[in-house]
Image (cartoon, rainbow, N blue to C red):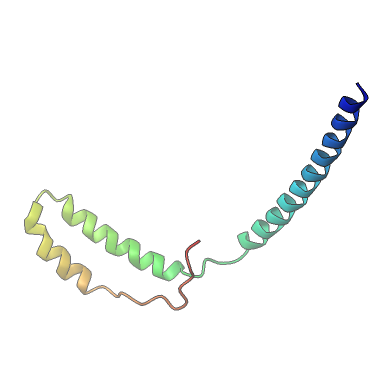
Length: 92
């Protein structure tokens, strides 16, 4: 019976320590997330340009003209600016 009690006491202590570490990590992540919320989005201009290009493509494709729309889409999109990313970030 004592072995069971000792084992339970040890396991409970280990779990408590793990939960404390988990809480500390979650608090650090929360602080970082709150800090990132105040920062502006670095690529907002690029995103706006890409969304504009996507709208042109979607509009042409949904016009019902099928393959006739492809040259028009290519011309429309080719005339739009397509800047290279300034500082590409590696994907995680």
